[in-house]
Amino acid sequence: MCLVAAIYGTVWLEVNITSTERYLEIKSDGSWAVQGIAQFGTWILIFTNIVPISLMVTLEVVKFM
Image (tube, rainbow, N blue to C red; front, top):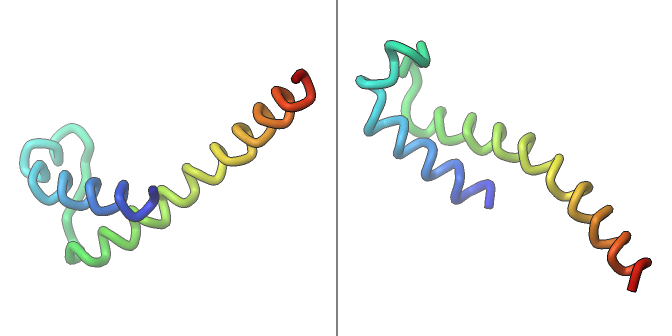
């Protein structure tokens, strides 16, 4: 999931950098590879919160059943 989201985010940023740099203030200083690695790390941090929450929900449903 992280890899797919990082690839999509990097491609989207490369395509839309000229229209979004005014309000997002994103500067495209690095190459697409550096942006991809940064996106991958960002998505890992975002998705680490989803796994424990879904695990707790699954445990509660199993207990209920």
